[in-house]
Image 1 (cartoon, one colour):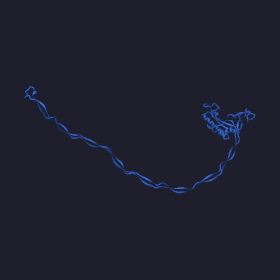
Image 2: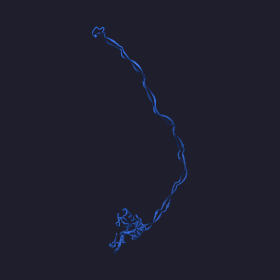
Image 3: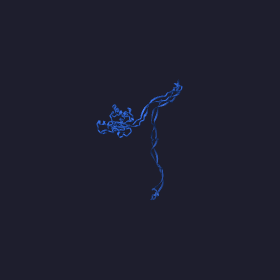
Image 4: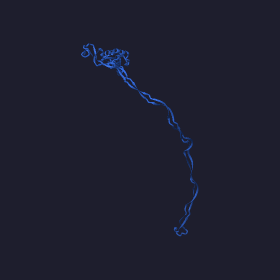
Amino acid sequence: MLTASYAFSQIDGLPPTPEAGKCYVRCVTPDVYGTEEKRITVRPAYKKLEVVPAEYKTVEEKIMIKPASKRYVYHPAEFKTVTETIQVEDPYNAITITPATFVPSSERIQVRPKLVRYEYQTSYENCKSDDPRDCMVVCAVEYPAEFRDVQKQVLDKEASISKTPKGGKSITIEKQELVKEAYCEEIPVEAEYTTITKRVLVKDEDVREIEVPAEYAVETVQTLTSKGGIEKWEEIDCELKDYNVLPIFYELGSARLTAESRRIIDQKLLTLMREKPLIRVEISSHTDSRGSAESNMALSQRRAEAVVNYLVSKGIRRDRLVAKGYGETRLKNRCADGVECTEAEHRENRRTEFRVIGG
């Protein structure tokens, strides 16, 4: 917190007599560290075990790589080609019918048999009666049989049949006729050998011990020489309690500092922070409204951090620095999104500022 000294002259650490126009910032003294050298055992003495290689001798040995066996040779069956006629359609017997024959003849046949019957006869010459019936005589009268000749046909030869072979088809094909059956011939196969060079163990591996001395190193270590945490009021220029423009420039769309920007930081900030080792400083970065709000916020944060990282590389403790990117949220003029502005107006919004925020 920054304040005029005349309002808080009763606070411990402030000058007893306030002086107009003086500003002070409350700081906390840091821990102070020194260095000292320490001899450190980086490796204690120990025993190293070393393997003594095994010893071998070289011998030759005949090795059977394939045992004796039998090989079989297959001899296929042998055939010869023969021709064979095959009936593919059976023949049939066509039947011819010879009808029965007749010769003419005649036959005498009785058309009425011999007949004897009674007949009434009247003899008028000898009849004395006027009634002729009185003069009737019954006589048995014979009529001879009657015959007639009838023409007819008499069978000469019965009907008969005759058969004549007809139809039937056959084809001629070639086929294989077995001459000799297939068989396998057994042939003995001798074993196969090779000669190898063999290393035979003469003496197995052994182990021997070797004493290795300890190793030491001298390290420079930090030691606390003065405990911090004591509040102290540090006098500062009153202008530093507000944001001050740091006139540095970046490459377009980049957070990389130019050589001129680093020179200005050395002049404006590095010198101040070395002269006032208890103060803390906020670095704030701003962009114009061109581009998206998200990308401008990210770019401004990277630019603020670039300044912080540069000061840290120059020996300023990081806990004394605060990086804050505001993007386009704190424009200094009317040039918000959608407003047409000159390049000079946009340049006014692109800035990096700093202020003292305490210690």
